[in-house]
Image (cartoon, helix red, strand yellow):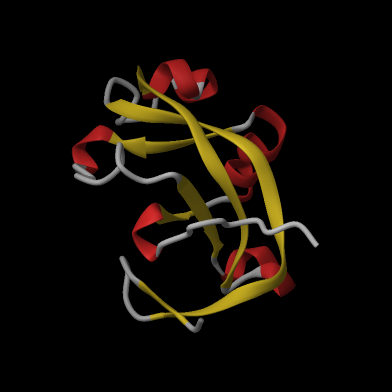
Length: 125
């Protein structure tokens, strides 16, 4: 059986929040995810993987981390470049990290999470 995470450490991964179903579609169909530059994630360029938390709006798949993938490349783009249909959005000129993910995987056993507040999730490993 193939090992997925050789030499894996918890510090190798950032868990991202898929706020809308569109975000999951962009991830699966186009292979990228966005994070606002103003978030100032100091370890973004040190991690190897992104995991993706789906909130309750995803129905039976909500409240869990179901997908993950290795970071392939990171670029800085304006939101309008990433989401051209949102040209009237108040954040359209803000800069975002466009993070390309290779080999998006689905966990066989999703990691169930309990939302603690607006920013953090508690992962039951």
